[in-house]
Length: 306
Image (cartoon, rainbow, N blue to C red; front, side, top):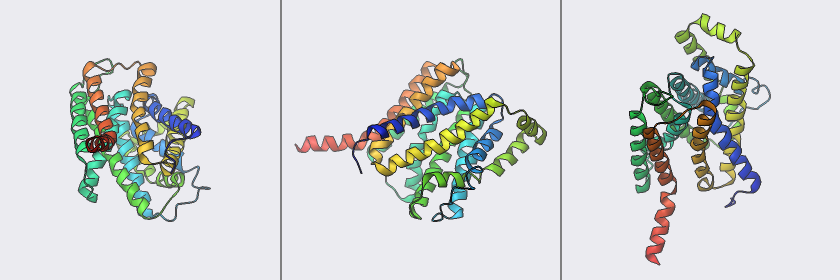
């Protein structure tokens, strides 16, 4: 593995960061006219059905893994995220809170897979939890009026993302696989459950009306979420992780909530409160400690030995 990204791979990484950061603004645009569960279903419909005709199924992976990943990510992560944003979670703050999946993944891996978190990871977790408390306590404040239920659902989405991370580890144990076919085929499974839930919550007539009224704006939102955010973003990011050490690529994900916050401020007029900014700083600081704590610890031991 190369130690430093080439210029071309730097460009790919920044494209992914920009696409994923803007993703939250695009979600808000879509949710203005389409109900959350229906929009989520359309996202996975567009990411799967046009492509399963010519993208081969990753045969080294079982149907169970594909179904479990599709349901946890599609119905769990994005179903909760879209609903939380529909119920008052600002786009910019959503991009921050969702990144706590890294810490939830750590806790799940410790409980279910016997992994032992390091001291700096526990420190990062404590700092991030403090940041989450500050963000949650700010509900109802500010121009965007963040709701508590939106905040709780977004934290739930982060937990579901953590669950899908563990499923990708289990998938890797079944053999190496191509990322795009994995996304395409796993995206089949959340479509029907999401449509059923949308009809149960909104009513069949309301869902049918929304489908008939889909315009170019809504179709562009679905195309962005399915083609750019899901297929292009996931495909490029996984390729980078396959070519470089995780310690080289993973820190770039810290830029996603930065882009998310800035784009929400510029395009949606969101203005986080002082408490939300302080909480955001706490979450991002916790992520930095979690990501770089091992490197700092090694350098500290090296300096002590020297």
